Length: 102
Image 1 (spheres, rainbow, N blue to C red):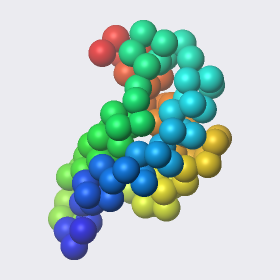
Image 2 (cartoon, rainbow, N blue to C red):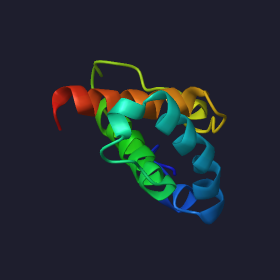
Image 3 (tube, rainbow, N blue to C red):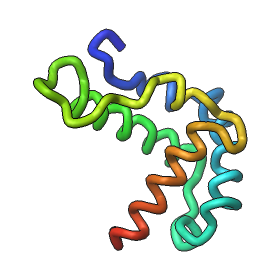
């Protein structure tokens, strides 16, 4: 993870995927209308986190001149608690995706 990009190995590990189950259940309850047609698995949430982290690095990372925004702190993505930062980040992603009609 020297380049600041995501560690796919960490996110794809069975330990991490099992921790994402709490996040998945919380999103299913609190963002129900945005995920009911395409309910995510813990594994797909892990893939989404990797994509988000890579996007942040590509768009707002150290190698970007005058980034438009600041990256969200990595610790937010490691908050697996129900109702924690990762729940709200991923819930917002699904809400945005739904509102954009993607």
